[in-house]
Structure formats: structure tokens, C-alpha cells
Amino acid sequence: MTLYESNFHRLGWLGLDPLCLPDVCLSRVDDDLPLELRVTERCRYTTVANLSYLFSTGVLPEREPGLEMRVYHDARLVEVSDLGRDPCVPQAVRAHVPGSLDQRWARNMLLNKWLDYCCERGHGFADKPARARPSAATA
Image (cartoon, rainbow, N blue to C red; front, side, top):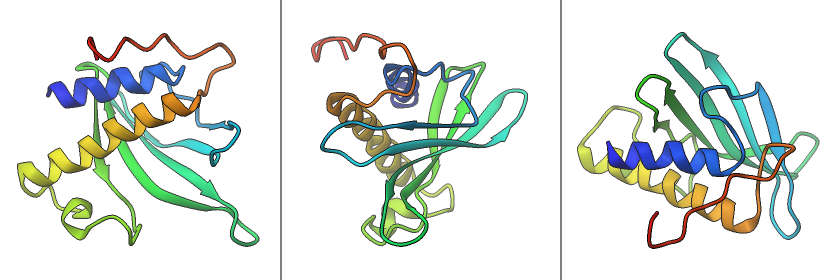
């Protein structure tokens, strides 16, 4: 659960309140691909959203990795529920079934590290600056 809690806080580093995500938001920074967050489902206690880079390869942008996150409002947790169809993601990590603890751990570590990377690159979704990121010693 500590990893899911960390994912919740890292999502906040991008300037979003994980409990009140906008329907769609886009972050653009120099020398990186646009990052999109798109809410696909809202329920009383959970929100499901996709986080992906936008690639311009044709008429319509492609969204990869199409990572699906479920935000648990009451527990303040974020877990990966699906990694999409990205062929670069190993099948063991991408499995759609709840699977083993190892698979869930790998998917959520991917999200955790990716959110950290996005913050380091300067991504943010809010008009105001992203929340201050704690030092590496406290993260």
C-alpha cells in the first residue's frame, strides 16, 4: 500500500488534486513529448484515468503507453489497473488479470518512476506551479 500511496502523492507533484481530476489535461515542456491525463470513469469513491504521451505519427495522435490508473478517494491511493497495448511493455508487466503480487508491483513501480521522471522533466497540469517535490531523502 505504501507504493500506491506514493503514486497518489507523485500525481499531486504534477499540480493536480488526485481527488478532483479534470476531464482532460495536457502538459507540454521543451524537449519532451506532450503528456495527457484523461479521465475515463468517475464513481463516488474512485476515479479512473489514462496517463500517456502523445505521439504525432499520422493524422491523429497516438497515446502510449495508455497507462490506466485507479484513484481511490477515501484511501488516497493510486494503482495501475492496465498498461494498454504498448508492445514495448513486457507481457508479464502488462497482464490484464489481477495476477501475482510481482505483476502488480512491477506495474505500480513503473507508474511511480514515470511520475517521478515527468516531474523531473518539468511536466505539470495546473495553471499554478506543481507542488514542491520533497528531496530524494524524504521521498
